[in-house]
Amino acid sequence: MTFLQLAIVLIISALLFYSIAVWSERFTKKLSWWHLVLFFLGFLADSSGTAYMGKLSGGFHFKPHTVSGFLALAIMFFHTIWATVVLVKKDQELIKSFHKYSLIAWLIWLIPFITGMLVSIPK
Image (tube, rainbow, N blue to C red; front, top):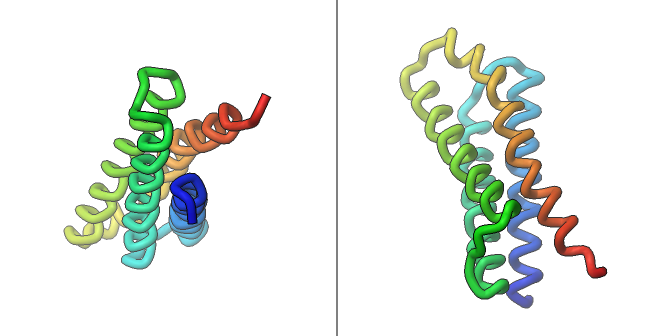
């Protein structure tokens, strides 16, 4: 498997893990431990895929896609840490209201995912 193929598999895996976690948590309206596992897997897959993409492009360049990608990774990281804190505290109100912000984090994360596909289309 080439670096490019591995990066693509990792980024698509991140999309799957993060989407399943966000949407199932939203539908059940309650954060669970298995959601947290998927948040972590999504973050790990995305950060690894991003590292491979950076290696392939000769390093990271200050462009809108790169900036939005790192912003999305940061949001994904803080979202995952926040989910961890909420579950560890066992605060039932926070557990039930967490889903209100997950969709926003997911939508922000989707921006660099989509722009990454668009900028990769051969001209």
